[in-house]
Length: 102
Image (cartoon, rainbow, N blue to C red; front, side, top):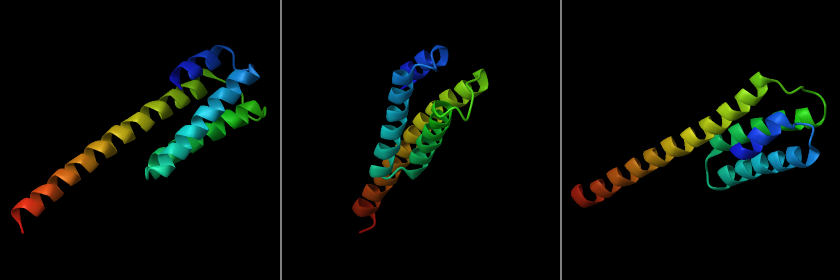
């Protein structure tokens, strides 16, 4: 999605590009919610809403807006990595408990 966002930054009036970007955000949202990462789903949902408002002419594109979308992507990835590490650590400790406390 980051390459789409970079292209969109310079060509935000391109409806095909805007639609592709919205679909990507929508897919990220659905995927995150499906696998149980609601925090990630919320980030993607907010990104999708911003892109939709630009598409509908309710919000203008600015450097700040594009930066917020890029920050959203970075945060999405960070949440994934941190949650994955937390889950892995939790599983590790559960295995240890099973092997050592029973």
